[in-house]
Image 1 (spheres, chains in turn red, purple):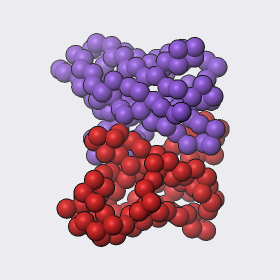
Image 2 (cartoon, each protein chain N blue to C red):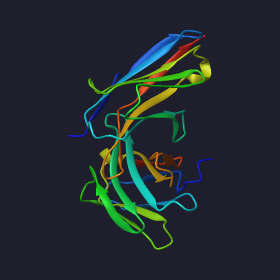
Image 3 (cartoon, one colour):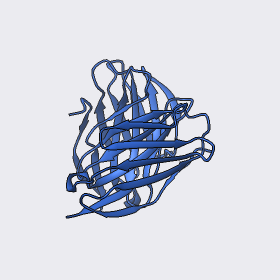
Length: 113
Length: 110
């Protein structure tokens, strides 16, 4: 158990819909990262937050948005969903040690039909 | 740019050594990592190496870093069926994010 909690574990929805994925980082960790894992794209970095502020942005579509709340949990919002958005979405938090280790949640599997 | 590349698949027999290779582009990376993903699970850190080191050994795992060629490898000695998983190489960046390779699926045959 990494200490990072993601909900829901599985989600099935239709094209055009909007979903929200939730992540609680490990206790004491201030950074949250979101990654998308799909079969053809591998593990793609989406966005990083540190203590409520956006720190870095990766290959995140304009239809996607995220935020980190004062209690440090984070939400990833995916809207106008397309078939190609079907993937495993991982949240990770970074430990406070200087090694830069990421602790990953078990992921939210999104299926868009 | 930031890019990490790995071969996609490796098959070995139980008891053999496995070597998974990776190349990266960011020469300013402070740490380089190997993560393991078992079926249905998230990624878990296997080992890491500081960029000023050439080698790190941890039980059955040996990490070799060639900074000049930007090449990283992971050797697993006496590979077991429980080692079957996807192995990801990753590099750190100045902003703190990690860039991952596509992952190498290791298949261990009994």
